[in-house]
Length: 118
Image (cartoon, rainbow, N blue to C red; front, side):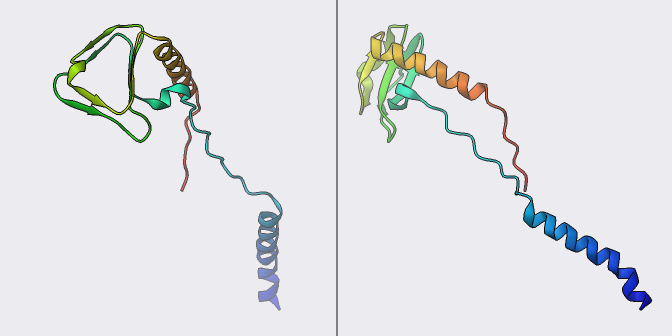
C-alpha cells in the first residue's frame, strides 16, 4: 500500500498535465503573407539609371520578360538583347513599376523576422 501512496501524486500530476494539454489551444505561427510585387512581377530587369549589356543576351522568364528603366534613359547594348517581353525606358509603365518596387521593398524590409523552432 505504501508504494501506491508514493506514486499517487505523480500519477495525478501527469493526468493533470495531459488534460491541460488537451484543453488549452495549441500555439501556432502563421506564415507571413507574400510580398505584393504589383506591376514589377512582369519585369526581369528593373533599373534606375542605366542598363548595360555587354554581349548577346536572352531575357525571358515564367514570371515575365519585360525590361524597365526609370528615371534613366541609357540602355547600352540593347541591340544584342533578345527578350520575351517589352522594353520600357523612362515611360509611365516603368515609373509605376519603380514605385511598386519601392512599396514591395518597404513592405519586406518592415516585416518582423520569423523564427522557426523544431
